[in-house]
Image 1 (cartoon, helix red, strand yellow):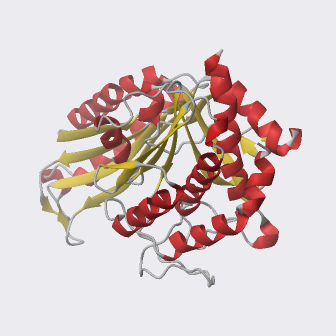
Image 2: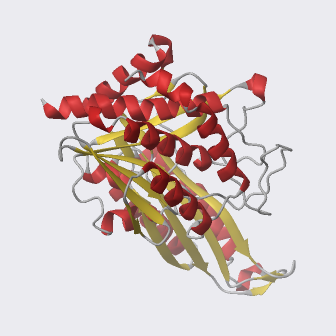
Length: 390
């Protein structure tokens, strides 16, 4: 099969279906119409599927061999963002937008499924197409994995459209792609009183400020400078009036790292600093820590295969190298269980006004990049099956 030619034959299909999903975005766990449309398309292709995790779908295409079983995954949910760009295919659901490109992720996987189903005689493997809900709230991957529908995978691949890379390039670098993504809540408990009489109170705002400042020493003084460590306090709420010291201050934030060992050590460091800072200023505290998702780490062997797949469809110029990014992605649970890769697919193009960040109210993508992603799925599948058969 000439993958690039097959993609071009299906260009109109891909563009039209992506724009359909863009017009009709749905939030995490609310992707009912999205799932319905995905299942309709799979039915047209003659690919059987099972419904999992409510709005999730796992479709199975059997080639000439039951093994290996290769998983290809996409996410399907949108974000609570109001789209402001006046596109012909602008979101019709007020306050909801595919600002993270999941509409194109669905399209890339459906287009790959369509082409592979038409060339089933060239498959010496079984393919599982995984349409995962609720990535934005980082809950869908675990539910798919716990469903039993993908227990037989030998390897798995996913991808994200990436405006930070030019359309026509793809990054499949080995090693960390995304950091872990943990979340914390801190409650500082002081003693309330009159704003003019600080000697009688324990000011939770002052103590909270000291905690925020002290937490920055983790990245600057407690961890290896080579490691990426982010400890960010992003909310700070206390008080009701300008002349009253409140009894409590409530803080929340996020914690990120690429290092799995450090991921387990960070909550201990954080609580020690909170505890000792509060004691120094006569306050007490409550601490909640949600470890969130692990880092997303590409298997080196499969990254080599993926890089060659990129060369086959885009040439040497299509190979991009991009350092991991401190975002979170629950595809990490798949890569904890199975070897595989996660690709960054370039979709940036200033001439088409496709130059805004993910989660931006003006986000859009160069659809040529999306087609490259679909081509990559097909080529990578063909290359991986040969590798695993040897």
